[in-house]
Length: 146
Length: 146
DNA sequence: CGAATGTCAGATAAACTGATATGT
DNA sequence: CACATATCAGTTTATCTGACATTC
Image (cartoon, rainbow over all chains, first blue to last red; front, side, top):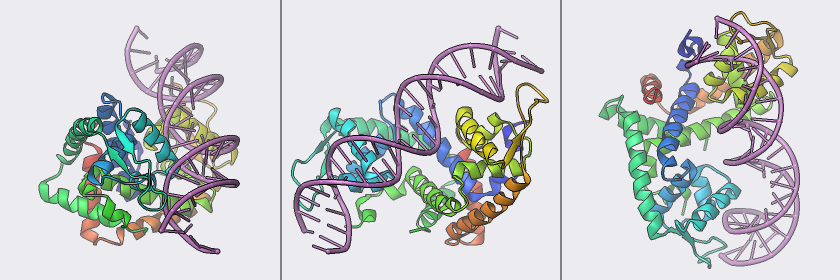
């Protein structure tokens, strides 16, 4: 018996299908990013920094859905590879603005292209209007617990 | 500046929104299941067993998106709490059929109700037709990489 | 043989808790 | 003062990788 047949009607649960989709996407992203020596969290951090230069460690952590401590470890890796820089002084509070280096920007361009291709492959199953609806409805769901 | 304002246009990425929704849902589920002393993976295993009694460790692992080894550890916990039983003999190959105990079924009933309430809270933001569409489109996306 | 399974051991990742210091 | 931040240390939890034996 195939696995799909063993799942009962669990594929009618929004939670299960959401997990399934997120799991599949993450796997595909990991496979693509491996050749660039980037984890998904590292990629997400670079993407966040590209769109919002100067984010702090804590802001990046929230944006990537990890703890401050985990993001600090991620940033050490990115800093040692000189993909990002961290301001030694804080313009406000204790926050130290982080920015992409030229090398980081170049690597991100490659990573973004790869990830975009993966996302397009996933969305290829549904038509254009459905894609926008999916995005809107997921956004609504995501903010249900805030 | 709020976090939402620091995200750039990342909320237009299907991958980001998918992660955001899955992260929010998992957090809400964890909060609900904690009072029943169940992790999300434990709950998922019980749910799978309820719908398909007699699943093997490997089948459960695939259904819960973890490795065989991880599921083995999860099952040890469930076995020690007598929520599930494992057949000592295999009807085919090496697979050992696992089933819910009466206690496991009772606990699952509570857990299912709690999780269903969480899912409904998440879906409350969108209308009925959108809910079915969301389920269908997510299912389509989930199978894009298989 | 190949493929799937169960299971053991070690390694890794990510999170947590708790603490300390600094800045608004 | 409360609050957010950065950062350090130690611990726990969950997961993974690798290996091996078993069974069809």
